[in-house]
Image 1: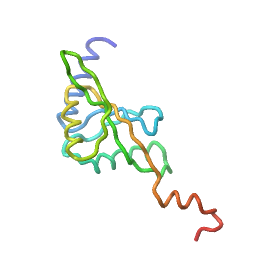
Image 2: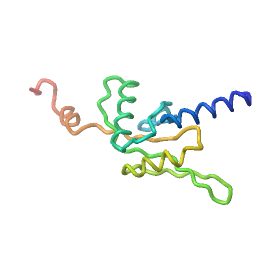
Image 3: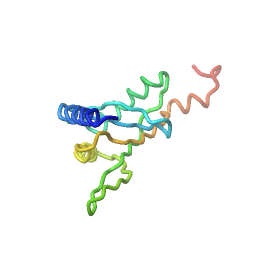
Image 4: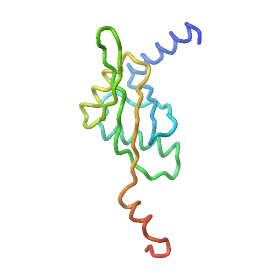
Amino acid sequence: MSFSLIVFNFLLCRFETMVGWIDVHAQFNGGEPQRLKIRCLGVTLRGLKDELNEFNQWVNPGDTRRVEYVRYKRPTLNEGRISFSWVELTNDENVTSMFWEHNKFLWIDMRITLLRSTEDIINSLIPPEDRD
């Protein structure tokens, strides 16, 4: 990749972040990472999970699983070196912090755990001929 293309991509990413969007590399249940853009201004944990659910259902039509856990790679600067650790998002403040921490990076790496609803699990245990 040429230097000018790298600079262009960096500036485009900075502009998108300023207008409320950021690139995410999301890995759903250990699958292949998917690249998507998500809103990063005024987002709650519930809102983020809803966006990720919508994306997963768009990529995997008919998938009824829902986002249960979201973890991301948190950058830490220590003595001039950047290191990363996986952190679970548990509340709205975590979501705000995540976007703030990544304002100088091109993307956020996320690992998303999808779980089936209780209703889906119960229905899978009942043979089709015995369902209402």
